[in-house]
Length: 98
Image (cartoon, rainbow, N blue to C red; front, top):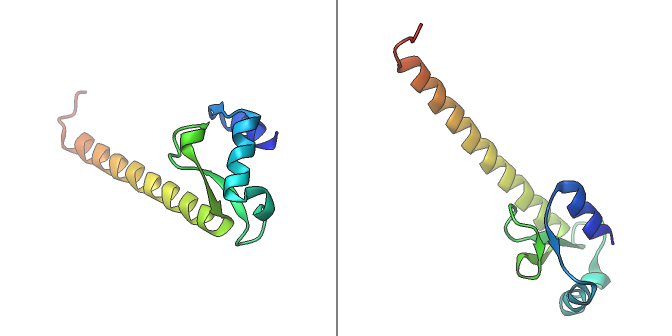
C-alpha cells in the first residue's frame, strides 16, 4: 500500500487496517476522485505531527492539501525565525562570559 510506504518513509506512525481504509475510501469516495489534478482527492493528516490513524485522516482536494502544507510550513518557519531572533537578542544583551 503506497500510503503505508509513504508514512514509513516520512517516519509517521501508521495504524490503519485494510478494512478501515476501505471503509474510509467508500465513505469519502476517495478512490473515485483521487488523482493529481487540482480538485482530485488526497488523504491528509488532520494534525501534521501525528500519524495515519482513523481519527487523524481526512480527504482534501489536492489544491487544499497544498495550501495547508504551505501554511503549516510557513507558520513553522515563522516560529523558528522568531525563536532565532529572540535567541540572538538574548545573547547580545547578556554579559560576555569570556
